[in-house]
Amino acid sequence: AKETGKARCVVYSPKHSGPPEHDISLEAAMFQAVREGEFLLYYQPIVDARTREIQGFETLMRWKHPTLGMVPPARFIPIAETNGLINLLGAWALKAASVQLKQFEEVAKRRLYISVNISPRQFRNDKFLDVLDDALAFSGLSGEQLVLEITEGTLMVDPIHAETILSKMALRKARIAIDDFGTGYSSLAYLKRFPISVLKIDRTFIRDLPGSQKDGAICNAVLDLAKHLDLSVVAEGVETEEQLHYLDDRGCQYIQGYLTGKPMPANVAMTALKESTYA
Ligand code: C2E
Ligand code: CA
Ligand code: CA
Ligand code: CA
Image (cartoon, rainbow, N blue to C red; front, side):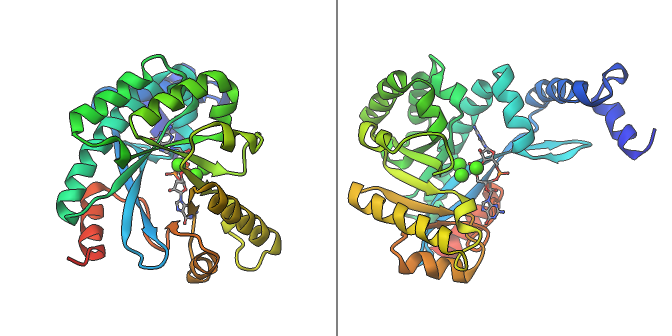
């Protein structure tokens, strides 16, 4: 009956009011959102810690609902993962981001890469390699310019299957990044077993730097491990100059966070690129 009720009327059918049905209604709205084209892609710069030059972008999905406004991915990705819509959305994101990178490169006049999140269900989907090939063929991107972000959990559900898929991705030269590194339920043995190229240190280990001794120890250990395994490291969620300097001093080469650029629409990213490019 109040303001929230009003917004709900548009999106949720009246018999679906109350907590358990809430997500069902959001789910129904998602199918409509796909038809209406309400999903967008934002791009967050990944920069060189020393020069701050943009090296690539992480693709982050957004849902701009006409009355609810921006629905955060933390709310709609889990639903899409449950009902399978993630396969459709994920395929679209991979293709659209690959095409977008070509345009970014035209502006920057140099090589860049694009990083795309792959959910567990997408990774396990039979069609995933076809989707990947389609995105590369359609955009004309070469495999090396693509980084696929997966979590430790994705690898651990079915390691034998993961090994097959990852080796096929390696044939296409696409790189694999472990997202939220260190937060999953897994062992380090998979770093030896699978062809991993990038570790993304989770924001929870960065947030309390440089004050936290424990987080500092964890970051140092990850950087040391990465160095010896010849992996690149991206520190996520860097918000302060102190954090950047701390990480740079310890050999962390790549930074992603609000300090060096929030997730932004493609046209804004284009402006950021012009400013970041010394041609
Ligand atoms: P993620 O992959 O770990 O993405 C990083 C998240 O941290 C993003 O949240 C980003 O906006 C946020 N972030 C980046 N820098 C900072 C910072 O300096 N401070 C703070 N506080 N946050 C920062 P976002 O965009 O809300 O996405 C949340 C999660 O949703 C992602 O976490 C990812 O797991 C998922 N997601 C987003 N887009 C996609 C997608 O296209 N496909 C799939 N499968 N998942 C996606
Ligand atoms: Ca990610
Ligand atoms: Ca992450
Ligand atoms: Ca995360």
